[in-house]
Image (cartoon, rainbow, N blue to C red; front, side, top):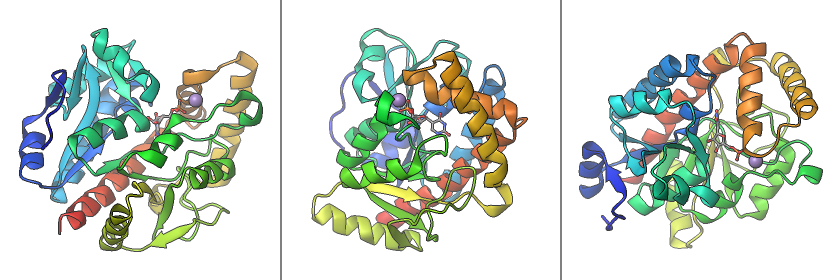
Length: 308
Ligand code: PSU
Ligand code: MN
């Protein structure tokens, strides 16, 4: 294992797994600090994080949730640290541009997909599970709001398993930017791009693979060609999905409120998720938790296959 900076703490199980070259799956923490409304987030985030970590362990891999707590960059959190993170009201949300800030300023932050990928890569973790990636926001042609997750996917060597891009985004434009960035977008057992809370969409997925072993083989070829990693789009299980007709109405309402209130920048994604949570009476969060668990299972299978 490579030498890590002095401000990094690697949890013991994670350190052992990395030293023995055993499968590890990284997890992000913005979903804990900014993905759920306070104060429901404390209990929900804890329950979700524990359930997600269990799914990964049951599949033979070690989970490593990544976050910054009081200036320490954590790779793997204890139950106590997870609880602490969920309870911090003013945690920062960090991406590539600002990951160094909470470390140098001794603050606490949730890592986005982009920041989590950066940390996973320095630790040698190849697979990462999340809910949905950030992308091109609706109206980006005037706001220029395009998540740094997309450029990170284009250059950082970590396989990201997600339920497609959140439909609060402009998904066709998101797919275009992913292609421009050279990100392979692979549908897992699906021909259409999963739409986060809904398992299918009207958009064709660029590539399709049907097993964790095939995904590992595909990645090994990309490695030989030094092409970086990519996005594995894993549909939410049918039994947990919210039909497009229902969720789309909530999204439209949340988006028009966002415009009316002039919400911009980093606040956009948390605002939309919070409003959709309220409008759906909590159903969006239930589906969100189900899809994160589903992604954790596939990510663990890929991590295990990768080591075979
Ligand atoms: N998916 C969720 N909830 C979230 C996010 C994704 O279900 O809170 C977070 C991820 O951390 C992602 C971030 O990286 O939103 C994107 O934020 P932005 O659009 O500001 O780049
Ligand atoms: Mn943004």
